[in-house]
Length: 216
Image (cartoon, one colour):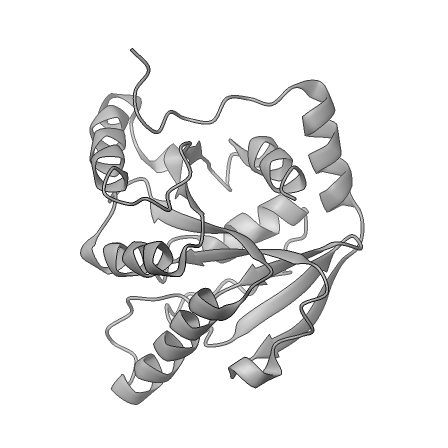
């Protein structure tokens, strides 16, 4: 019997090449958005990346695009408080959402960017998929559940991407996967595959590129 939410299989050579070409082409920063009225025109489809602060989101985006400093990685979780838009080719936006769940930032600042995050997820018609990043070392936490429930309510398909897989021993990975799978069972908007990645080692990057390139 196939386990629910299996790990995404390695794509075939053609899909891998399509993904490589997409991310090998121009990737340009468009703007950082601090309010909904600042969003760029909805003239192409978009995918977004969401995750707890310090989950490795910037590192993953940089690994996907093959550019070391495209997304701003910071040693200070919670620094990025904007929705950052990038173009990939002629038909796709990559959207880097502000990290959530960082309790040590000022309360007013947290409230402002959490509100922006929620408004974006609930109201962007061209959003085709949200990639929700989960740290393989920790699994799904309560603060992640809040975002997953919001995505359910907004009818936004989301796919879990496990980050920092190289930091977890193979013997411990099954327990984490079981916890993540059990959590996803409760969410109707969850896409039925998990992507296991390591930005540092490059694991899963080709797979994720191919998945993104195949979204219509």
